[in-house]
Image 1 (tube, helix red, strand yellow):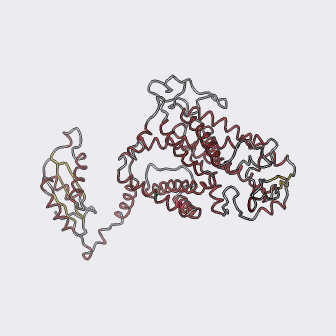
Image 2 (cartoon, rainbow, N blue to C red):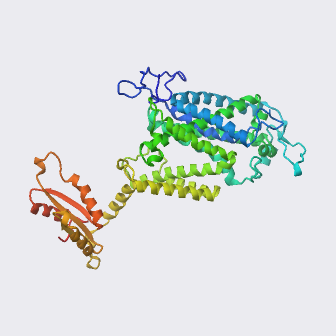
Image 3 (cartoon, rainbow, N blue to C red):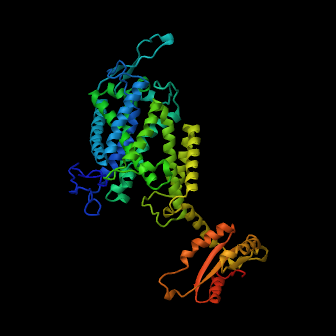
Length: 538
């Protein structure tokens, strides 16, 4: 039986059989599993299903005359239905990634079948009038029934639908505009990171992630554009604005559309919940927020972070209290834009720092595209909701300040240090001793310190003498490197830097190993300074 540490799809799907696994889920004693995901199963499928989450916003009008009244409606009922479905999704994710992988693949088949039936229906179904959900009139009176029209392929219908024509959203009562429509449609692109979240389960992540993501984005973009084109060519504006679930009314078999919409919603929910729980578990394991996320470190015997799943489930349950999906669309989109801007900013920082371990293979990548991505995300954030954008940036700033105050693991490295090194190196190379002039002379002090415990007053005095110049603390350790097992100087740098911090002086530290103090002092005199032939004043 595969465990959480096994690849997600170690099953007989699409004719691919996983290798036989021992009971502990490992590929051998102390080894990793031999089964890894292909680009299609590991990147394309989860990304496509996540990006098809936009169909969640294609409402199912189950209470109108054109539909079948199946379940009671209302805020309380909708909250109950959402909570039950969330409980189902949470149960699947809590039981482990293996069950999630099976459910995702079956969902992919259901969504593909539903999508195919919708596309065929646009061609096979003839013109028809579709009764719309009645709206209450003044003083509680009922208005005459209204109808939307499915005209079939008609150039006049397409021409009438080309304009913007923003109207009132009948589910929230708010008047739509470009920003609100963009906020809803943008949720169809929020699954672009789903493939990257599977990097640990892929055969070749460096190739599978960009290739699979581009294929999934191209596929979903083509499907969306095709649906938009077919809808605007065959459905009048009244039907498009007054019935978000019109796919059912024009379908050859309406239940299949219903199945596809629910399957896509469940798939997007599972993908988001299991991805969020893994990120939350990683944050807890790195101890970034202390006791707040400490329970999220708990995992099952197979390695499933079920406590992090429960954390994520609780947060989503709070979100369900909002009731209307369009109410949350702007806020959700803003937070996604913040996340994408942060990713673009990270890539931009690494590119500007010229980090040697950052070597993107995507041929169209450059710092210009990163900067454009950051600027575009920030612009759309404030166009969609200035209040939510400002609040999200403030929250991100507070989190960054909290992490800085707590101090992250030193093994991570800091991109700020890479940026500083890059800039300092660039400007040091521009220093030219041939252009020195007495008018711009600055002192360069080298203070040899034998016993740092009693040298604090001397350190502070020299710091006052430097007056904007270079200040170097030098120390000679007696010894011969040839006769020692390791360099004894390197471990001392941390203590000397702590001394500089405590003394509150602006000084560099330069240590050397020499058989005598005299030779060590000569070494420091020769190598200290900003330029090779500009020696500090001892």
